[in-house]
Length: 380
Image (cartoon, rainbow, N blue to C red; front, side):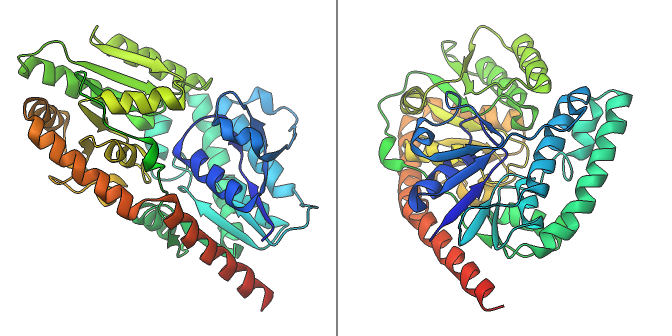
């Protein structure tokens, strides 16, 4: 199968990037992207054929950062006619699905409908100036208008969770096939407990690191052992909103809160291996790879009771699903004081990941859907 992948950016080490990497490796695919920063994403991309699209839109630099970014991405994919020989195009992060305007067939692996446009529109607009609100509202209207027609024509849509599947149904009125990402569980292990809680995720408002800080501060007040730390590990982009958010977190943090920015894969795996437990506080996360990596490391996962983790974390068996920072603090105290329980939760989690979330399982399901898409398109 000749597969082409389209994706706006490859400049962080998020879960979506790992999905793209695994698909590209499996099919020896070519990736088209506008932004590729090889030193900020997974090293394995260096062995992939990546073609960078250079599309400048006049006056786009005069717009707010994210509006300018969205305009460049949308313009590039909407107007792009691929000249390569291919059987199938695999689109990923929005607006890469706009590639369907001039190309087919397309299998869109929708990690989520753009949250700034839909479910988090009101939240993200609150912190913007009146001028920026007008600009963003205009761009959202244009995106929705274009997306409605394009998504209706896309041959097949896959997604990462039932949570995201429901969003696709709500906002695009399309059905989709759930194919949950995997994890390289053989790379993860449990070495010991060095008395810290770990929350590894990109530093962005949607990941809600302040929730973890509040829970940790409550935990310290309840615990007799004041040596525990909270480690917040993740990428910090150049996005002004993300930088402002990091400054906010820094002001909240006490001396027991440690930030580790842009850690390597090896460093992250080591952080998992030595943690007491792993926290996850993202707002209604699409899927969430962190709970899987925690369970692969034989560590209890303490996650907010919303979004993708409700599908991957088994409450009281592989970890805990909580509804407030106070409840999270209580579960942190529980696993810190009950090592036997922490070990049991970790063993259960590892077993669940090995059984249900391997990359072999993911790629097998993806390949079946990809070949089905090609076959049905050829019969039309």
